[in-house]
Amino acid sequence: MRYFGSVYRPPSEARSLIVQVTYGCSHNTCAFCSMYKAKTFALRPMDEILEDFRMARQAYSTVRRIFLADGDALIRPAADLERILEEIARLFPECERVTCYASPSSIHKRAPGELVRLRQLGLTMVYMGLESGCDAVLDRMRKGHTAADIVAAGQKVNAAGILLSVTAISGLGGVELWREHAMDTAAALSAMKPAYIGLLTLMVEPGTPLYDWVEQGKFTLPDSRLVLEETALLIAGLDAPGAVFRMNHASNYLTLKGTLNQDKQALLQRIHSAMSGRTDLRPEYFRAL
Image 1 (cartoon, rainbow, N blue to C red):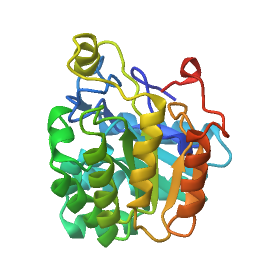
Image 2 (tube, rainbow, N blue to C red):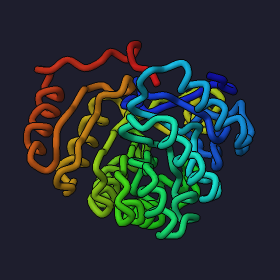
Image 3 (cartoon, helix red, strand yellow):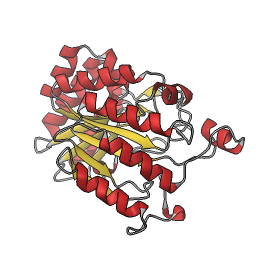
Image 4 (tube, rainbow, N blue to C red):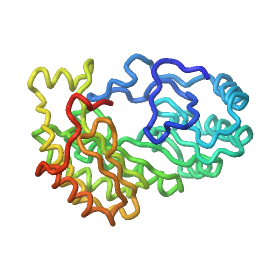
């Protein structure tokens, strides 16, 4: 396989065949993110994409999962995506799921019928970053969308029958907006009712505007206890029956796993146990992106 630059994937795609269909991120201005700064966003030539799939078919006897990279594969024209999915179905009849990152912009760009067609052709799930349901946080972090925009995008994905996996970032409101961040994020997730919810914890990367703000004293990072208090407030406000909740990223101080809403009280009890010192937290030096 051939890759250009660093390639990122969700943790659940660890065993997937990864093929780049775009390079970089179509937005790439979020103040907290350093992932695609070394790349200029571009659509990868279609002949290279199809050749990679043919190479993969020769290399691997079985391919159960495929992840379309980079940061916003759904931004490609619908005809391109249909061609890619048709080739996947032809080459990998054993493939059980095809997934990709999607942005609110790329989702809103797709007509409802186009999303339905992509689902029919095998697009199983998309990963979308909410980051925060608080408009003040989204604006400061240069997300480029309001919470209402992002919720509408998530609802559009659900309506098309495509599974939705949404991520949010604890600590993103800083000390100043932690309550608003928690409550509004819970409200946004509840309105979307995604199949999967992933909660990361903020880590500040050199080279980002957020890093400069922290260095200049313009953004105050919450400590681990405040992050846990924020997380408890968020989970208490969640109403997403059947959603699989995961807080098991390397950035998290505490690992949480459960299914909403049935496991909500157990999740809250584990947080309270950690806050009282009865459950160990991941040391700061072990946290990573």
